[in-house]
Image (tube, rainbow, N blue to C red; front, side, top):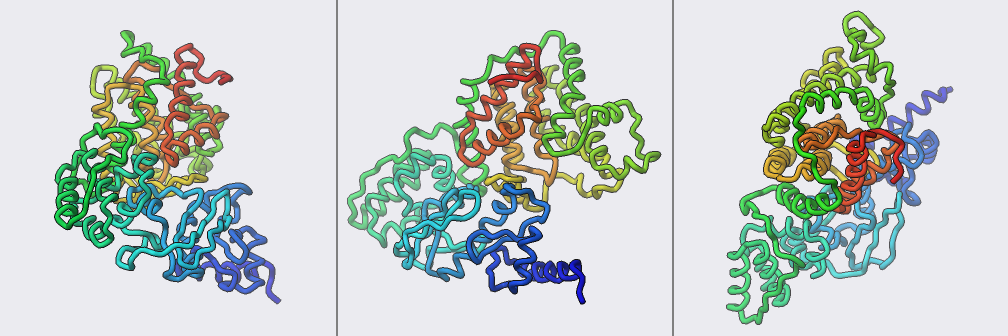
Length: 517
């Protein structure tokens, strides 16, 4: 007779077969009732809606949304295919968002289908699918993204609602800039007789400074006999210059976010004190905050680190060669790496205080910070030497976040842009807030992005004479929620206010007090 452990192993083998076949949305019929109930009971699969499941880490805590957000698109792909076959596609507006690089999990996924019921299907964590009864685009105008049927770029631009460009201007501008020639749009405009839409798109491209595309749309439509009246759908003119040949939607997207967010940050931040006359005292104050900063920063990342361990690491009592217990302790390696990285960041700050461009210093030396942060883990064999190679080569996800960081290939386009923006930015508070935010938005490494983002924030704060700012672990939820608002809703104000609140406390000489907002 099989033991409980053997039975559990058998059920896990069935689950592994599904995972090996790339199945994310698990239908009840994919598993026998016995296996399904056993896997649910032990937390290895989670019910999304009746008869449909996703895999979940069995140790995932109740209320943790990570596995759902990671599985969302894969689940929807299988569920929608099972329900509608090829008779569905994502709405033009949400398709356009995906083309623009905004692949955050939507609160409600809007689906068009000729057999839609115009009713929502509730999913996990407040998300849902709404399937509206609607005709579909031509087959040639539909493509797949992560297994989900969506409207292709030209068709989604033509068919999206006029209000989209005004309400979601970052997505709209980013998507429009991916079109390289008016001919990509004109076939749909001409075949559908879309004279009003043609006028709107001509106005949109004129707003972006793309005169040729705007003129080509107008001239071609008029030559075909259509009365076209140009109208700009955006609320405001575009004041930044785009690289028309840029292929990555993320580059233009990040440029737009930076431009649209910077004034909000300037409004809520205290005036920069300026580079201090007494640089050595400024650096000594940073050094004095090491233990406090390390404790809170590592605790935010869920490491179990005590001030005693941090002091032991700093004093040199931690010994890689002679202490087998420390060799096995991930927390100790994290603490040692933090100490080494902290020293490297201070060296960078010294250069910034000496007048070097803060963006250039960070560009040149952030790789050193990262190598110091994880060097001890490589030394004791917790990580491979190749883990120090640089930016990630795989997709990464953020725990409990609807935001999915950009793909691995786009990282190498986005990171140089980040440092270009830091180098050109004139306000240190913008460098600090957007340096941190855009860094974690890109998420260039497989691990350590939060710590690196906070190091970058503090290096940029120093460029304006602001004090080193500790983000308290007690404020972790507010911190993460503010970053989530910036990533998913493009609302930087909560994060700017949060950092400004802490900076003000530091300016008053009280960097980690029990503050009251």
